[in-house]
Image (cartoon, rainbow, N blue to C red; front, side, top):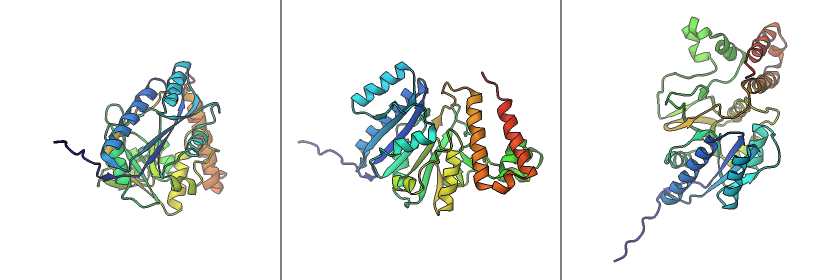
Length: 301
């Protein structure tokens, strides 16, 4: 007697995954392999599942390019290349322009998802409304909470507390600092003002409605800006503490000083946009000086 196959019962939305790579190295292959394994789990365990993997090649070595082109030839990924290094924000927007599914996952090429993480996130997201962005719990290689996972709205005060470590002197300022790493976890789903851009899950229509990432940010701060616009337009950001993924970080061959320069430029644009009067005040000049010094003191390596 033949046995009827067990049909998937967990409903999820089809998802387009967008990943922007710039000289990422070996971890890119690890990240892609994890996503393809997650796709297999989806197809086996979720009703209505489909996963489109879009990789934007902003620049990679010859070996990595050959690997990506082979995946594209095998119909495993949609590969966008030839545009040069247009930056993370513009690269992400380019990838999303090719997304064909209603759900969107933006993920860094150095993030490793456990086999069941994608299914768990999509199952959680299926119960959310059209204005919700969902982030997983992001950890370092040693399993510790990653700095930048959960953050306050970026304000001059929040950044000053962060840079000067004022919360060490005045513990009452701890909840006002920019990064909220180490704060108590009170629920499976935490509502936060700003999440990390390393892994963001949302309706594709929500990303389009907000105009995507602001391409005046080249690298860094674009996620902070996006989260601020999302919340100001009635959206919410939820952190799923049950689903943990590893973000390796620092795998690109871009120098630390080059990265810090992009971060400095991102802060300059952000504060001139959202806090223009403060930015040109004496206190604003002081904050500008701190940001500039952090860049200048970063080793060029």
